[in-house]
Length: 236
Image: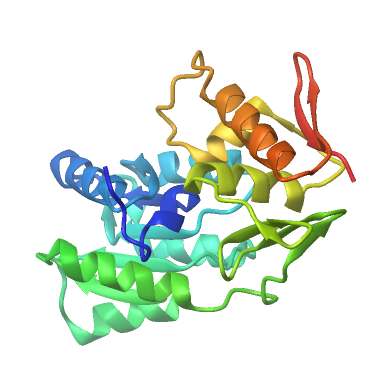
């Protein structure tokens, strides 16, 4: 499948969809995956909290239904904000009253979309949220001869651009941002793939092998260390 330059980098961006309508949740997840995102889905506030608690890094955005079977989405939104998370939140609701939108925005939502909505509009609103700055501006990551620029999506070895797929870029960025730390296979898969990802698959190993090969072909030393039975570490 071919991806445009505007979407290819989204492969390693991870979204959380909190929606109790199973048909709508499945439709949103499928559509967002086709847009290039990794997507987790929760059907209740409790499920959403459980997924949030398991994330070592935050989600890149949350789509949050206002009415949930075990509580109000506004309350969940307020709870997310009170925990210190700055993840963008797009609230979805069948209520179109001004007061409802005000309550959601006051609780910490970044945007509000009334059902029914077009998927194209939803996707555009997500892209707009993701373009907003979050915290410090991302600077170029440098480790020895390797440079990774999150803004231009380029990897260079001694000044030479090294082409990589979106998942390979995401893997190397994750390792470099945690340089010197051991990342388990589970931590990597949780960040770069969906929650239904087959834990028995060797796709992580394959991607690590490809990244190593491409860096080596460009003249870099092998900086990705394998700790058998544990995970991987980017050596400083």
